[in-house]
Length: 461
Ligand code: 4AD
Ligand code: MG
Image 1 (cartoon, rainbow, N blue to C red):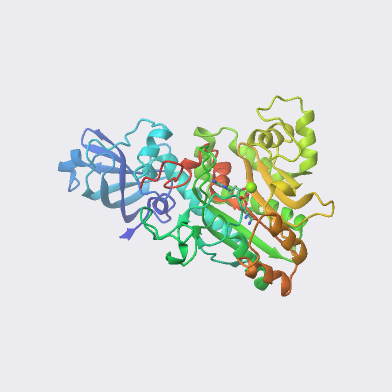
Image 2 (cartoon, protein in one colour):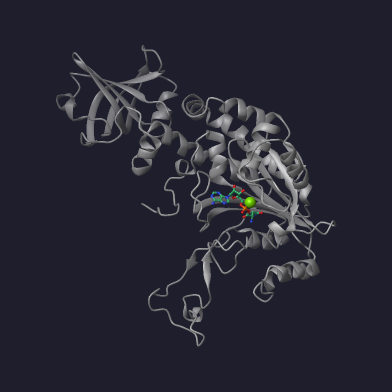
C-alpha cells in the first residue's frame, strides 16, 4: 500500500492500486448504504473523492466524520465513473484521526476575506487561501531558481542593523532596555551604550547596503528576506513586515538594471503559468476575471520606459482630475502611478531618472546635476512593485550626498571603503514579494497574501 498526497493520487498511474491517504474532510454526503467523502490535504486545489460503503470497518461512526476532521483512508484507487474527477478511492479502512467540532468555521458557504483574516489560523484550509499559499511557495522557489540559474549568489543580509538604508526614518527599534527605566546619559538621553548591542539598532528596512558589499566581491548577488517598516500607512498595499528580493550587480548601469527587472518579472510569470495553472484558474474565476489576459499581456510585451520628467508632463497634460496635482519634484502618488500603467500605457511602466531631492543618498547622480539614476517599475492594479537604482560609486559624490542627507561618514566607513578599494559601477533593485503575489493572483489586499499580516495596530498570532 502506497501512501499518497491527494495531488499524487489524482495523477497516479497504474490504477487500480491500493493506496493510503491522510487528509481533512471538506464535505460528506450520505446516501443509502454508502457515503461520499471529499478530502483535501493542501497538496492541490482539487479534492479527492472517497466512497465509503456501509460494509467498510469504521462506517458505524460515519456521523463523526464531520467537515474539518482529520482522517486516514485506505482503499483502492480507481478511475472515477463520476464527472469532474479523474480518480477516486473505494475505502476499505476509515480512521478518524481528529474529529472537528460542529462549530468548525469553514463550512461550505463562502466567507468574506475580512472574516477569514480573523481566523488566519484556519484560513489556509480554504480553497482560496490554500491556493494563495501554494502560489506563494512556488513563487519563492521560482525566484531562487531564476537567480541560481544565472550565477547569482544568495546573500543572507542581517535582520538587525544599525543603518537606515532608505533614510525614511521608518525603523522599528531593537532594544533590551526597559522603556520605563532606561539608563540615561548626562544629557538625559537614553544611553544606548548600555543597550544590548552598545548602540542603537533596528530591524532592517532593506538588505541593499550589505548586498552591495557582496556585489563587489561576487559580482551578481541577491537577498530574499523579511523587511520591516514602521510606516503608518494603512493601505491595501503596505505591510509593516514584508519580504523583499534585492538583486545587486557589479559592472551594471541603470539600463542593465531595468533590463534585469523586466526579464525577472516576465520569467516569474511564465513559471507560475506553467506550474500553478490550477490555482491561477481559481483566481481567474473568483478573484479577477481579467487575470490571465493581463499576465499574458505582461509576458508578451515590452515594458514602457519613460523618464520621471516625461511622466510628470504626461500626467499634467492628461486633463485628469487627481487628488494630488502632479508636480515636478514631488513623489508620484499611487493615483498617478496607476493612471500611467492602467489608463495611459496599459502595460507595466518603468519610470527612471527621478529628482535627487526625493530619493535616498546612495543613488548615482546624473550629469544634469538634478536627477539620479533611479527606476521604479509600476504595474496595473498595484502601482509600484519594484524600486531600484544605479549606486553612486564615486567617493567624492557619495560624500557630498551623505553630507546633504546628514549621514555620519564614520558610521558608514565600511560603505565608503567599497568606493576606496576597487569601486565599480553597480546597480540593483528591490521587488516587494507580497506585491508581486497580489499582481499574479489578483488578490487586492496585502493582508491576504501573507500568512500572518503585521499592519499598524495588528500583530495577532
Ligand atoms: O522602493 P523601496 O523602498 O526600495 C528599497 O528598499 C531599495 N533599497 C531596494 C533596492 O534597490 N535594493 O522598496 C522596494 C519594494 C517596493 O517597490 C515595494 O514593492 C516593496 O518593496 N515595499 C513594500 N511592500 C509591502 N509593504 C511595504 N510597506 C513596502 N514598502 C516597500
Ligand atoms: Mg520605492
